Length: 219
Ligand code: G3P
Image (cartoon, rainbow, N blue to C red; front, side, top):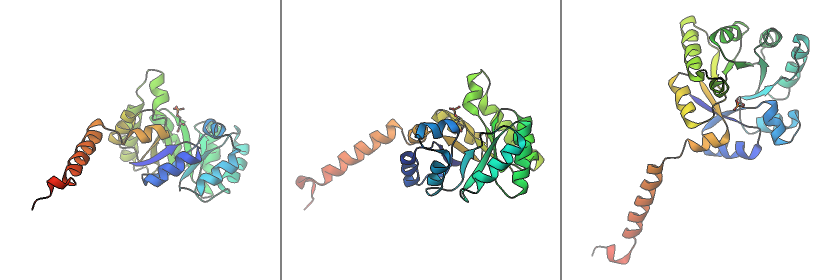
């Protein structure tokens, strides 16, 4: 599973890219607003740092979405245009995909929605794990079912597990067969952490320091 970071914060993205573990970024209007910049400027900056940057449309009608999607796609070759899983969003997505623009169908919560996304030629489909859990459903099970349905049907749309809120979500998304998992920077950071790793380093360093003491040198 490829790892993406779900943020529009340039410092977080630079750090994550520096770690060498992420190959993409997902954004949405909430994250762009949090970064305090205008949409176009921020997305272009992110595209200079990493490939596969999802940028969301904010209009609602098919024709407006087509115009907006084309405009967003022209910002940078790394952009993937997000459209919501609505009749207008998918109809616009079909036109955009037909023009060779990569689209990410977002706010997906069922296998049927994922089938609709595939039917219009989506490059990514984004089931929202945490938000489904929030209403007492099983977000990870939906990812697993979408992956299974896509495999059975020979669908090549990539499953991007989104709204991953904690490290267990990341593990579950990988075990469910997601192609990509996108997560906030804090969750990405938490993937490194284990008390036994810290303890192991501490012990190795302590033993190494002993070998540097003069009495440890054998004659
Ligand atoms: O990638 C989608 C993500 O931004 C939604 O996350 O935590 O707001 O449900 P969340």
